[in-house]
View 1: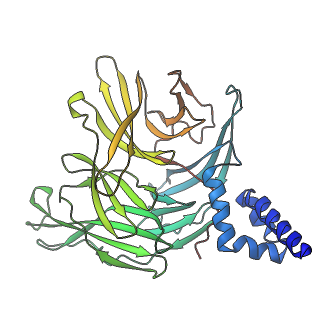
View 2: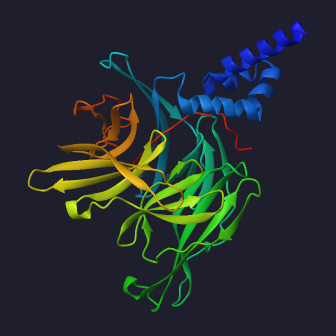
View 3: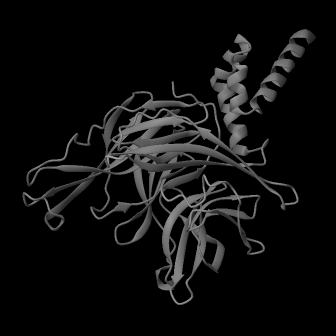
Length: 394
């Protein structure tokens, strides 16, 4: 009996040690022993490795996934879009004086036409949901896997040419994990309209109710679901996934957050804090530890400076929510987009000129982070805080 117990203990130790390793090392170890390959591919091990990565127990660095594009013009004036993905790992010494980074360029064979570009529209558990031209892909940048989703059941393949013909336009996309069904889902919101003239000018555009559809990895197909939002609704943010819910910043004349419960396929409207009287306008939502955070700012034209506030949502039950003001920044110049908190009191941001900055909420100091030109002054880019995982798309 003692030998069985020792064998089980040894196996547990091996699993614990392996689950602390980086995905790159695990991919190599799969080729060493068949038993390790079976172990690393098992759902329980994948879940444990993901949990360790999310908790960040064994790493002091923050990983940024950077998506950027560059237009290449040829001598005959033809052009093509080039897409580049990189992972940037940021870390600070324990004394918080020495800043370190390393950059890993990724070569992901996206199926692109010459004029296509890639947009990151959702992220969950190391898997990124992107649009590449007119197609939707799920991609794990760590393992270089990607999967093409089937065509939408609501989007028309081509634009109509005559009046009073339905036009469908992609408006927003969300991606996350349904904990009840234990599967990944993609939700897509479609804006519908028609025109009362043959020229199809904007002034003759007639907005129609939005429609929505959800894709599940288990069925590998789309199905239409109910949505009831204003025809004036506009979403201009990359979605945020948190604990079974997708969130978007949206506006229909009033700023709010649109949420989608992946468990019951229901949309909800969440009110943002009232800041209009103070001149603040909300622009972004992002994750702050295990909470949803919103970012608003006010620009002072006379001082050429900007003041910002970060609010954190608490106790959202699907109907009501409460907000707490977490941080006031500024007035400062060149404030851009917040990415995440790291080292407890450091807010990692992108400045308005594209450079990475770190704001210390305790001291109020703002410093530029000296990382390579891959992130400095990039005009067309997206960046998100990324957790490496070995979650498979198969």
